[in-house]
Amino acid sequence: MARSLGQMFKGFLRLGSGLTTRTPCPPGPGSTHRASLLCTTAALQSFLFPKPRDLSLPNSSWGPDMMRLYEHYNSLCEVETEGEKQPGPWRRLPSYNRILKYATGGVYLSKIIQSKARLFTRNIKQQGAAFEYVVFVNKEEQKCVCVFQAGHLLEGPPGHVHGGAIATMIDSVAGTHATYLSGLVLTANLNINYRSPISLGSTVVLESFLDKKEDRKTFISCKVTSADGSKLHTEATALFLSITVSNIIGM
Image (cartoon, rainbow, N blue to C red; front, side, top):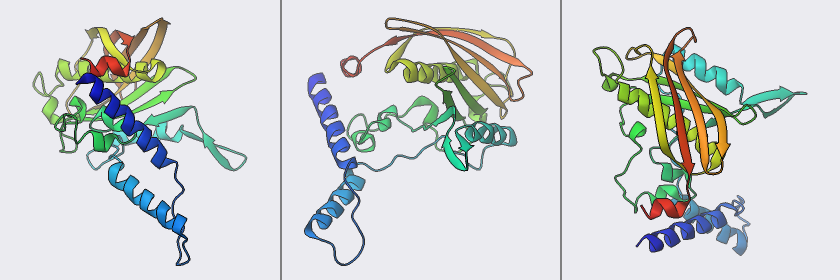
């Protein structure tokens, strides 16, 4: 069963890659048979491989601090050189309700493989109720930054964020960073020190740093601070192990 799922997954990836390289169909009544074929291919592509919704973009629930920090880091994703915009040192990472949707054709695959599964941090539809966040990565500095706004459904101590929700975000951000650096990984160890509570509805910043890499091991450190950087809320270290797609399918 694991082998057949793996073969099907790879097949969809190849199919998706082939379709996405097609040239879009030209407009106008004088279309040739080839153009008609390309139109059909484009339509098939949009049907089989629809674009997933990026949940890391601003919505009406984002507060002033969340928007300010988003705009700050987003502005660093592009720089203007001699009147032309070029990629900057930072990159915003898209976020979907399933990791599977990152793959070509992932939206379609997610409908047939555990279709009800959802990423824990993206499984609540109500905007602002739980995890609102956006992640940026800097390849040169080997650093990752997440702007996180905690919703009312994440309560632990009255009026404050549950420690498990904080741990979830640290694991998610550090894991995303490790994946960006080393490919597919799984968390092997996570150590957390809670310094001060986080108020519900507030915005905090999670910063992830690469400590070192050894063979399959990627060591990451992370800290959580207030939006202005004046207060340290949490510190953590994590170890991630590199894996392959076959490791995931065979679990």
